[in-house]
Image (cartoon, rainbow, N blue to C red):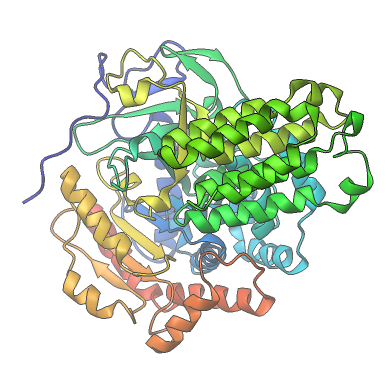
Length: 580
């Protein structure tokens, strides 16, 4: 017996599907009219691929490929999977590719390819290997990009993550935008892409809120349809990030590029302490850059040296975020400020803050630190500086670290009259995060009634429980009254340490799900080797993979496809007959 669906996230005063007069915002069930055209045209390509294999049918099934999160491991494994699916002719039968977290790093790169590039994904795989092997990452390019990003009102730690962590690991920056894929997708020459995130506003505490899923496609971005009773709310993809009020466009902002979208989808926030340490280490690289020290970039007019003060402030905010002892950092900061008349007020406030710290809770401490930042930052220092853009980047990053601000974007539903849920319309901004914090696979975006997949090929690169995405999706579907095949949890629990390479779940209703754990008995051989593989390819590995490690990971991921080619094609053929 299924649980009762949750209260509607979107209660509209207008008929679902009706768009406002500008057609920038839409509230509708299921997929948009633009996506319907893309899917219809893709269906023609799918039909041709089926006929090449001797599968005679008038209509092919909707095949969705899900690629999970998992950092750089997921990005490389995703490339291996898609290359092998392409090589075997199966990718031509796929309608949707939906990615979460690290897999979107691969997806973004592939969707910059031309149609010819999609015909031979081996070239994209070779290019990935070349980038990783040659370490094509440039510190000064990252710095320049960060200074430019900090000019935006919605600068957040996602921008920092994009041009430091994601760029450092993938060795790639992209100015290409998701809306640029629209031509390919509407013609049906490529599978329709779905990039998954979640909204921080709707993810309350540790509860994986059912309403929190936020998708990006070439046509629309927004909150997906939830269950059979709640429509989704969307903004046209080129306008995602622009300012809206009351459903009307107030100020158009440039569409964010793929580099930012990859950071947004893959912000890897599951382990906050590790993330803070990484940001701290990278920030120090910027501060200690040798060429900066030889120039007057840090040494400001009148002998004022901001380097030590900024660095101590950053260390203080990092310590606060990781629940460390802030008193030593405050003492160092006060010592650094003492004797400098420009910071007399801030130094005096440090004394007061030190006395109050032990008598306040976390939220109150954050307010005290915020006031300290206000008293420390001097506008005239920026005006005198020859490197105001650099100082602005440093300062904004410190402020974002204190508030732990990620994925800031303008809320397109701000004061929207057709939406009664105040969680959605009350704030000018919304904050988007890594969907790995939800299910780590984009099942909710391809299941009925959103996209009505007939078969889901789920390639799971998640570290830890190889069946977590399956069991959590089953729970999600029960809560939303969505059909999902039965899951034998006892069997999955027995197989957790050494899973097989493919599991098929099917029932009387809902899609057929084929689940492929990355490391398994077939490509590894034993539980011991599987365990060693996870140590080698751990999610929070911040050093480069060797060329041999990249090649082996590609080989393992491809084997999961190759060994199960006949099972996949047999199931697609069976479902094709059912839809003929």
